[in-house]
Length: 269
Image (cartoon, rainbow, N blue to C red; front, side, top):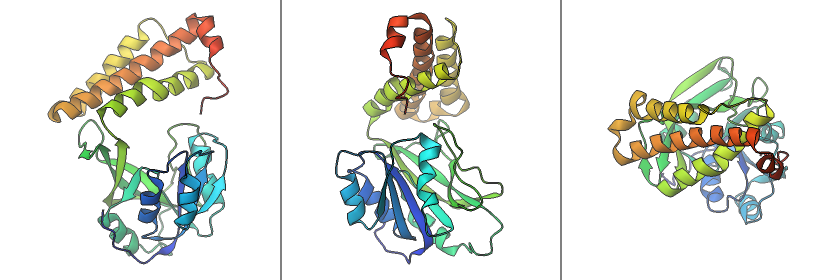
C-alpha cells in the first residue's frame, strides 16, 4: 500500500480492537489518508494497542466487548462527523479506494452507505476463489441514517440505499495456513456452538457430517476453490472443519452435562 498522504475529509474513521498492537498503526495510517477524525473502541487490550492508537492521533474509547454489531456502533455514536468509515484492525485502504472515496460528493448523495470490495489474504496471497472475492462490505455510511446490525456476530451495515464502489480494501485475514485452521477449529467453532446452543438450536448425530460436507462442496466446487490450488483446497477444508466442529460441539453440549457445565456461557464474546 502506498504511503502517499491524501487530504483528509470530514469523515470519522472507526476501529474496534483487542490486543492489536501489531496492526493498529498500519490500520490508522490507512484511515488517516482520508479521515480527519480517528476513533478506536478498545475492549480491554493488555498490549500497547491503546498507547499506539493515541500516538497515531486516535481518540480511544474503553468499552468491554458487547458483541460485534453493538461494539461497532459505539464509535460512531461518539463521532463528530456524519459519515463514518469503519475498518477492522486487519484491513487497509488501497490507493484506488482512497481516490474513489475522495471523489464522492457525500453532501448531496442519496445513498446512505457505500460498499467496497474486500481482498482477503492468507499471508501475502490474495485468495480470489472460494467466495472470498469480490466480498462486498459496506464500510462508509451515514451514521444518522444507518449503522451496524445489532447482532453479536457477523454484523453488517444495514443501509437502505447502498452503492457499490469500484475499489478494494485489503483484508489480512490470516497470517498463514496454520492460523486459518486453528481459528476455524478453535474460537470460531466454539463461539458458534455456544451461540447456537443459547438460541435453542439443536443438532442430530448427522448434523456435523452433513454441514461439514456441505461447506466443503460449496467452497471447493460451487465457489471455485478447485481452481485455486492448495490455498483453495485449504480454505475449503477449513470451512468444512469449522462447520463440522461447531455442530459436533453443539451436539456435545446437548449430550454431555460435564462438558456443558464446564463452559462459561456468559463469556461467548
